[in-house]
Image 1: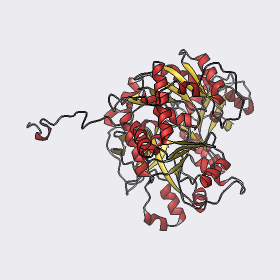
Image 2 (image 1 turned 90 degrees about the vertical axis):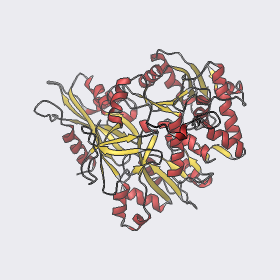
Image 3 (image 1 turned 120 degrees about the horizontal axis):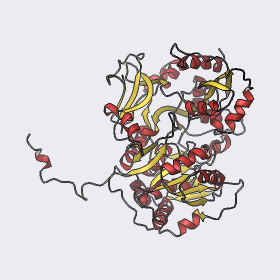
Image 4 (image 1 turned 60 degrees about the vertical axis):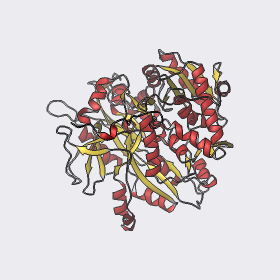
Length: 546
């Protein structure tokens, strides 16, 4: 084969090839627009120059404590400026950011800290009791740094460790931060919900974060200096990479410790918010707020949602209130959203029922995603684009994870056949738009949070009166879905559902506790396998009041 002449004597070198990293977005923003407001948090206003300097201080202080390439720094923080600083400062010294879901229980957090070999944890004062419980169960003994957020007015327990502001003060604001040695280097690790056992650590790289962050801006048509409200937790897939997107467009982050209706409406109106993301429950919360809490907006707002499709009435109410809602879809393994329901102008003239049907579809691939299809997992061939033939949703491209940390077998299975297997079942419509139909791993999505049915079942199986249990999703007006537990009691045993509910409350995070318990004989196949599809249909009928 003849050598490509355009490769002869034309090699990569530092002048023409640099690793892609979203850290460069902040450096550019601070250089070009140093005085532009980067962060708003209550009364706090912080410029891009300050944001950059504080992130470099954090990187410097972490390096002084021995954090280098490949070391894990964990963060148990709400949507505050400190969490934004962690998204830059941790990887600026070569570290890998592990953002922890604040709704998890201590045992799961302890597992994650051990599995990721965490060396430092940065914890908001509100969650310090939870972190103490987790560390008591963990094998690692990381340095603990506490953040005292001025917007937090709740109880503070005694703490003798390192204060975050004092920690930053010891750092150098001019720290020469590290570019990744390779854009394939890890920038973060995020844990799945553990649907088939222990949670899996999803490793993301600098290249993917760079591309997805830019893809967000292009897909959502975010203009320069857009104002973004943090209703989506930053611990979810690194906030879908929006902590990095906002620096690329020199936008403004409006932080919120808690997702509450009045602060959301006030921020939308007072800070001229242009974009926000969240599960449908966030929209329901806003629309259901008392009239005195809602504000009349003098500008349009883009709302990006995932999880279950919003009901038609909720979409109509959001449109009346001045919001344009767009449906996204993705997974932790794809850095967050990698599929968008790209809207055609002509669809806006259709009847509302037809618009709702179209909005319920997940859509087409993000610009930085190279491949999206629904394949037969046995033959790896695409299913017909007929809107009815189901297959498994699969992804391919630079915004797919590196793999699962310290889990080569799970990684091998996930990438079998050269595609990432999502485990979600879907169809493709004739116009090429994807629509999910089921979740092959029986994941329950409640208020945007993933709940493992297996985890809940294991807890119930430990109750002495329980013989057989099956947990499925039940539709819920507020949360989208909640767990519904079908329980078959052991012979000669009696138990009230309230006792089972309390049993779960004592052993699970609150949002994982089933909302409904049904004491019944559980249907099985001739080989004894539980017929979950029968139970799902029953739960759907009950949840919809049929």
